[in-house]
Length: 175
Image 1 (tube, rainbow, N blue to C red):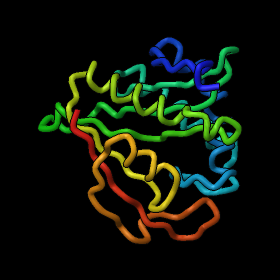
Image 2 (cartoon, rainbow, N blue to C red; image 1 turned 180 degrees about the vertical axis):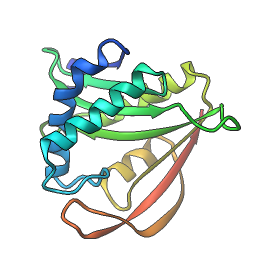
Image 3 (cartoon, rainbow, N blue to C red; image 1 turned 45 degrees about the vertical axis):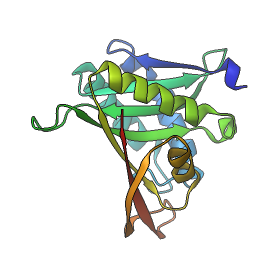
Image 4 (cartoon, rainbow, N blue to C red; image 1 turned 90 degrees about the vertical axis):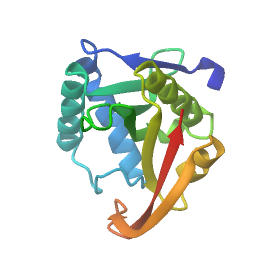
């Protein structure tokens, strides 16, 4: 399956047309228990509003939006590179909202998205990347395998979609 996966950066003119499919992906991930800033149940309108804001950021050049698609063009996953940071951090970017549809997990999609976001960061002249994730989750293991350095953990940093508190682990990577 991973051979059939295409990772690409979504351009400013295309980003608004991807809002609906990205909203579906976000709803799927939150319903599946992903702690990605939203609580369950996640109203679809709220997911759409979030992705409209992302699309506007892509249009302004404040973020890079990458998508993973199957051979038929169906959305499997996404990740963002946040580029709009303070002027004393032009060399840095944050990686955010790495999402993979539940039906596409365990097929190498997340690893390919991470490799692609690192490539985009290099293209953007960024040499330090930072991200955070739920402590003890699959993503934490993925980042460690990909060479990211664990910085530390903040207990009870956020809530899982069901309202239970969770810790967050921070990572960085020098490119």
